Image 1 (spheres, rainbow, N blue to C red):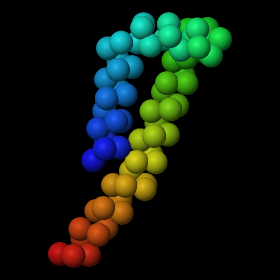
Image 2: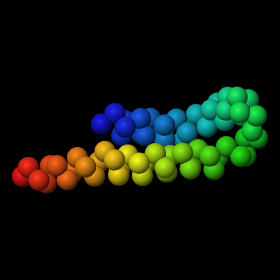
Image 3: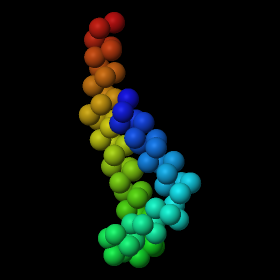
Image 4: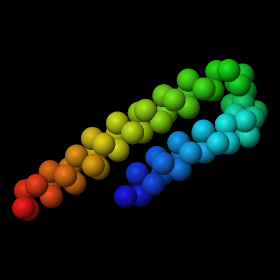
Amino acid sequence: LINLAYLSLASIAVVFFKEAITSIHSKMFDLEEKQLAPVYLSFLSQYKVMTLVFFVAPYLALKIMWH
């Protein structure tokens, strides 16, 4: 549940606060703002896959086994 909440929060933050987040990260990591959009999408997609594989799928498998 925590991972799904974090994924939702991170996605909402990227969508609604993109300018502020991009500004902060471009200064922190010395990257251009255009370079950060693919980085954000890559992070969110990898995090989503990892959450599904390591948390949601095992949870569903255990729920199926116990019913």
